[in-house]
Image 1 (cartoon, rainbow, N blue to C red):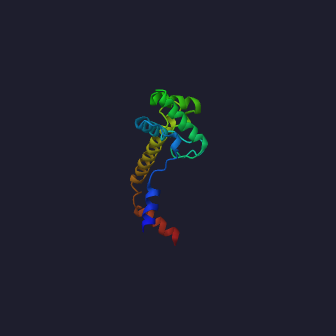
Image 2: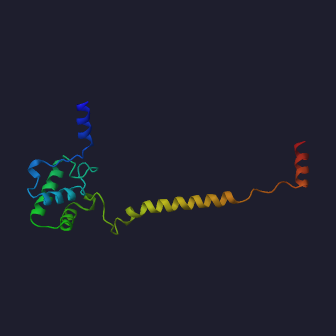
Image 3: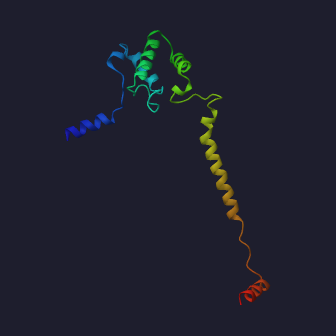
Length: 146
C-alpha cells in the first residue's frame, strides 16, 4: 500500500526537469524563473514547457532565463528576448497580435457559424407542412391509383 501511495504522489506531482545546478540561490528569482519557464514551449518536445522538458535545448533556455534574471532583466524583457531569438512559436500562450488574431478568433467564429446553422435549420423546420389535399385532388389521386 505504501508503494502505491508513493507512486501515486510521484505521478500526481508536477514534473519539473530543472536540475539542481540550475537553481538560483535567491528563492524569489528562482520562482520568477519557474513562472517564466512554464510559459515557454520546448522547441524539441513542442507540447511541454521548458520547465517540464529534459531536452538539452530546454535546459539551455532555462539557463538563459536565469542568466537574464541575475542581470536584472524584467519578465517582459526576458519574454521579448526569447521571442526575438526563437519566434512567437516559443510561447505556449501566444500574444494577441495581427499575425495571431486568426488563431484567437477561430473558436469564436466556429461557435458563431454553429449558431447560424442552428437558427437557419430552425427556420426551415418552422415552415408549415403543405395543407391537406382538396377533395378534387383526392379524387384525382384515387382515379390514378385504381
